[in-house]
Image 1 (cartoon, rainbow, N blue to C red):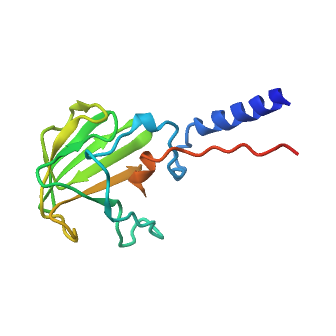
Image 2: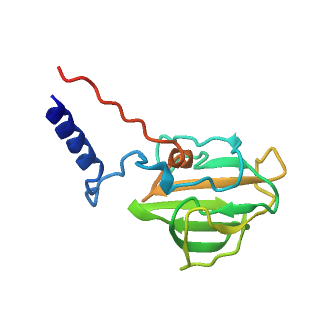
Length: 170
């Protein structure tokens, strides 16, 4: 019995790390170890606007989460990666970081202290939170986004442990 459970667990784990086919749509976000990720700001996170799962990739909607923040407060890299962009987009300062497994996180509005091509570590400062995020109900909000390829995902999934449950064999 124990050997069958171990075999089943190995099959499940092997499938979790199988590479994606080149043309396949990315699977939903799964996180194998929360120690790989951290909050993009210090302290307790308060969501002022949640992520919206959109019906298709061109639909209008909210492709990230807005987090209550302190103007001028530090914004942190959520995970190890490389800064791929730090500059202005549509009049707002944005930082984007590429991570392993094709993930990219974005942070706005952030006055960057990093530049493109710079490697960053989980929890390291990447800039400070600017004011002026449209739709923010408080003085300052961080818009935190996540995508794999062209698919937008809920970045809060990076901070939640994956729940694995084994079912009895019949």
